[in-house]
Image 1 (cartoon, rainbow, N blue to C red):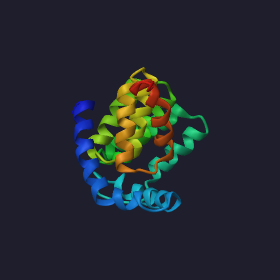
Image 2: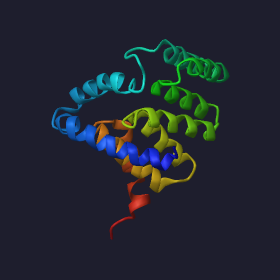
Image 3: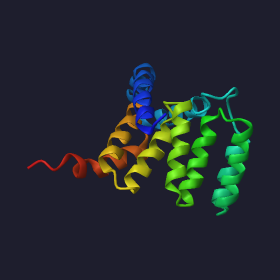
Length: 174
């Protein structure tokens, strides 16, 4: 599945998710919405997996990244995905490791697979937007930040990124 087809699928599922939960989340205090959003993320990111909840491989990979062991993190998640290729959050974590190593192509491929497994994975969409911005695609990055905010309206980093790109993409009003 191409990244753009994943976008279309994500937009459709994301809008459904927002219609079901986003309106309620958008109507409450941001601090509560952030807690709700992070709790939902734990479950929604596990879509495409046969199990929910904490994934020790993802936690160990993030620990390795914090220690600066990027190659070890990539190898660890690649081995984990060989044994269980149906876990969207593992692909998202591998994309983070690839991006940390400066490997934009593999990071993009990992995000594509995460979004294929879970089109409403707003952290993967956010990562895709960041990557698109870094490779000089500000309009597509802006549109992706907008999509992230349709799924999770109180995502502060996405709000800031959208605001930062707004004038550059939409132009300034005179």
